[in-house]
Image (cartoon, rainbow, N blue to C red; front, side, top):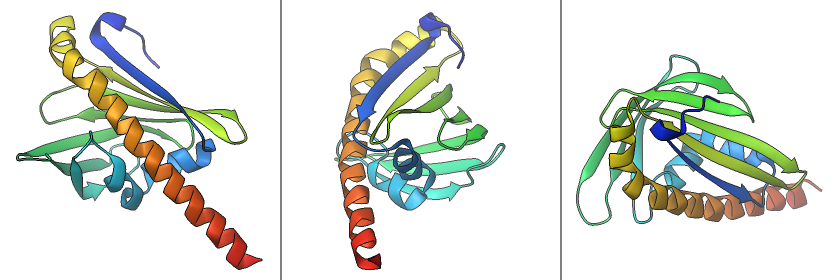
Length: 158
């Protein structure tokens, strides 16, 4: 990952799930739409082509009003390690999502938002940092559901 702290917003969370499950929660749009965005938001994913140069187009629906169109192009896709993209809708920035295995049942996810200037970064930082944590809260709840579903599937197979 690149490093230029004046132009970056970095957020991370350790999770009680294997890295493969955390990656799946992102890579599968049926899961992703359930947790992507801050508290109270819902997402409609219009296109999700998870490969280099693939498009990700979604609408984030605010809890009270407002629809926020998001359009990005994936740059890097390394399963269970790294996904990066460039936003082509405002606000413009590059995003890196890193997945790290901590042990067999724990992992870490990190978001690195990279802006062109310190000014652009500072304008977003106050808003984005707490919202990223809300996003991680939603991911944690979704992971509990996914792990429960997978556990139930395993029991049925026995």
